[in-house]
Length: 146
Ligand code: DHK
Image (cartoon, rainbow, N blue to C red; front, side):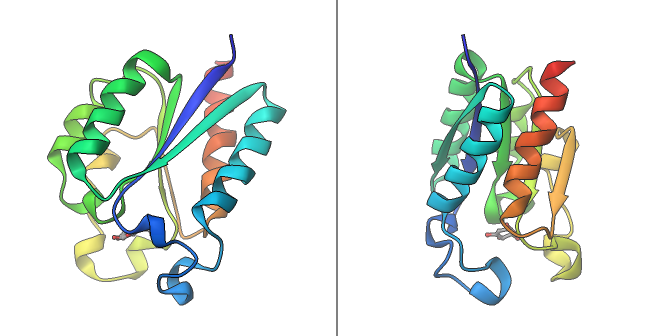
């Protein structure tokens, strides 16, 4: 059976392409889903991309991923910097986790420099624009190949 990578996105990322394009660019989440699906297909993998503005929904999706996903790529948006609940949920997941930030969070306000999710993630990609998602999928493919 084809292994699936769940690509989870947090608050405000539904506005990707419209929101502060000078920081987050012009591509939409739909564009991201297409790019990631193409890269995943090269490795015989599939992707499922979701977005929610609600912390509890993301926790529920991480728990669902325990049963259904081989790996998680996650951009928790602002919840990166605040959510112990998302970290705790990720700590129940057994496969690889790659954290993605479109912007370089280390070049921005100091409150964006800390990530709870990084305590769990195998890898972190920041500042590569939306290309970071496809890079994360590529990395997941390497990790799944063992
Ligand atoms: C996205 C957000 O919404 C911010 O709250 C984070 C992240 C950075 C990004 O760069 O993708 O601080």
